[in-house]
Length: 211
Image 1: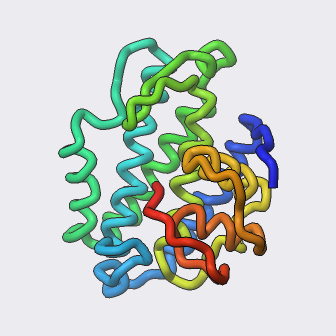
Image 2: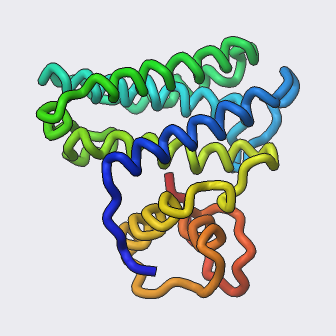
């Protein structure tokens, strides 16, 4: 597999696909399913849903930054990020669904309103990276696609994610992890392994968590 360039239009499309997969999976959960464990260690499904909803709100801050030039960080502090996740512990299922759906729509609308010039404006991620606003749809695509799998409902696996997204994800994580070689296997399984998620690859070394 080789690194491939991804376009803004592709990242937009992957974010929309991942959002749809995630919302459909969450729609199928009853009240009792939210406190159940997700595939992320020590995270419930409710906490995971709250994290993705809070991520959309945080990315809306970066959209505002790109649109206005006003410095608005994703999160005011690490504590604010943690508080967003914690909200998923006690929030009723209906409120969680509404927050997830509403924040996703607000982000999508904000991205759609950015002008060609605003897309080039630089913002700073929660990890301190300075990036152009054109990175925002890709950041969201990673969140919704990977976490749709992490929800652990069995309705979404890495094999259900767009091939182009998986190729771009593998290229990015491989570069971040500074790996010179990848194990043989299907693209979805290699992507899952690189992301530190359950996979079916034989004899692949254990990797630490990512995202």
